Amino acid sequence: MVGDLPKEGILVGAPHTSNWDFVTMLLVMWHHGAHPRVLVKAELFRGPLGWLLRRMGGVPLDRSNASEVIPGLVAEARSSGEPFRLVIAAEGTRSRGTYWKSGFRRLSLQTGLPITLAFFDPPTRTMGFGPTFHASDDVVADMDLVRSFYADKPGIKPADATVPRLREEDAQSSSEAGETGQSSG
Image 1: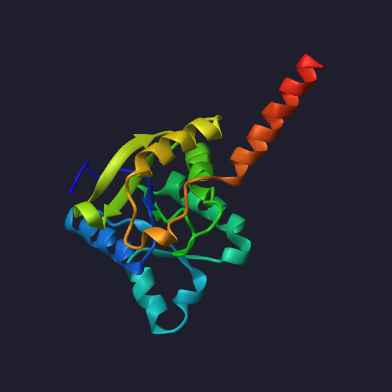
Image 2: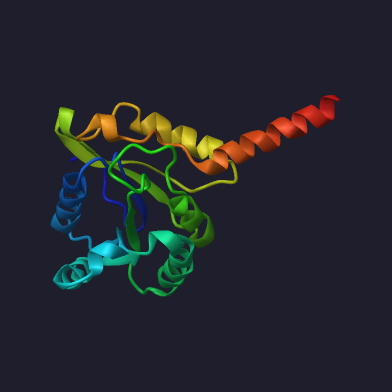
């Protein structure tokens, strides 16, 4: 294992291309005495699996209304008497997509908790924790750090990995381009 398990914060697990990356990371964290909260799609909480997921620290995520989950997690992070660790697969799916989900940044900004980049890299048979940082107002700079870290970590199924990019980056780039155009015109 590489790096140190953070005492608290938001752990971004990537690339998320298989269910095994999630299971493996959870086992490593338990081995080190950590009991993180884990965002899991709400559909998996039906039936007996729901009981097990809750016991494992699972937090149901209604993907059709994901923004409603953030306020509850913020409240829990602020009121919890213990270190708050939340594992998020920011890709949001195990198949290739266009954008990552931005909840990890929003939680960091709203709680002041740091973001730690976690990984499972089968080709090198390593896993662990990379850099820890606090989200800033510069989404592009934050995501440049994320992209740099994950650039050489292909995941179990490299073809299914999503390049770390947030929709907010496009909005920030468009806004900056508009400001540049106004000031020179």
